[in-house]
Amino acid sequence: MKNKTYWIFALLTISIISIAYGFTKLGVSKEKKEVAMDCAETPNTTEASAFKPTIENKNKPTGKAPKGMVWIPGGEFSMGSNVEDESLCSIKGVTKDAAPIHRVYVDGYYMDQTEVTNEEYEKFVKATGYITVAEQKPTKEEFPTANEEDLITGSVIFTPTPSAVNLNNFLQWWRYEPNTDWKHPEGPQSTIKGREKYPVVHIAYEDAAAYAKWAGKRLPTEAEWEFAARGGKTGNLYAWGNSLKPNGKFQANIYQGHFPIKDGDTGEDGFKGIAPTGQYAPNAYGLYDMAGNVWEWVNDWYSVDYYKSLAESGQTAKNPQGPDAYNDPTDPTQIKRVHRGGSFLCTDQYCTRYMVGTRGKGEIRSAANHLGFRCVKSK
Ligand SMILES: [Ca+2]
Ligand SMILES: [Ca+2]
Image (cartoon, rainbow, N blue to C red; front, top):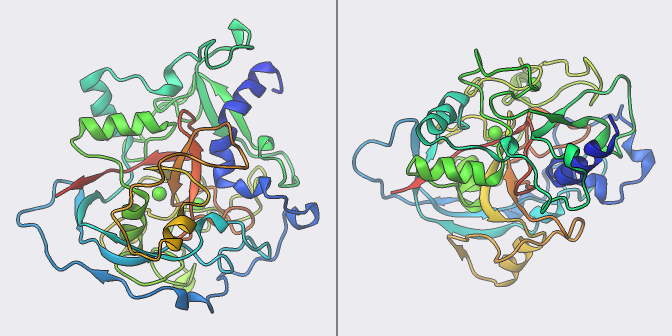
């Protein structure tokens, strides 16, 4: 597997993977990366007071919401996360890019209730003939040093390891698979037959944006995504509340068990791997899977210090559109936008980004089998 092609694409896709697991680059010590950690189910919430109350707008549009969408009233809220809360087991500060908590206002909008599904994406492709990035042959311009025979279409797939591994190198459980794309989500022999209601995956940023435009919608800003995910509540850890398993029941499709080994995912939440959309209760706005299942593209450039700059302004940020440019010092050559919500691979052993205030990031032309999107529409 570790031939030249593999590494070319490992490089191509490194940021999308590091998003979900970005702390691999944050210098976490080896001792703390041992897999069988004893993680608290619910992180410390004693500092939640940094959140001020959410104030929803009162005005509502007349008429019905577009099919499959719900009205999100917008308003003023506290955005971001408390670094001390957003821990990876005992490793603090892994999501420091989501701090500090700062005040934001967004206008109201409609939002898709679910992640965009395969059948929805198929309608778009049939109507337009659109070809996704994963289906496009990589070019010499992108990879000037690659051999011609190594430039093949494909995407990245999670591949469990045969046995326990140290979690310091995500390339152990991700592989570039040729001829893999949204129609072949688990590899060239797989299809989306029977997966019509599953979220579309292997979607790069431009693939998501193209669908949104065709549908008369757009991708949410990061602020819109988080306002919606919080469901009008104030300062919760999750889209549904502060307990990961209220009454002992999981509320999202994430990962339980020993990550990332073969048969390690116990599926205690009802699903090993990806699930059809809408299998768990919606949040207070009627949105499904705002935590887990697949990561979701939003429109903002990723900048590690964007929240800091908004907070330092001392003002409520009005309809923030993201920073003017991307900035990720851990990976400065990769052009990235933000992902939100975590995926079916997020676990308290390794990626807690199903927490509602936390952030992900991804190289804009990279995709994987845990990355999709949903759309919004202005009134
Ligand atoms: Ca699961
Ligand atoms: Ca999701």
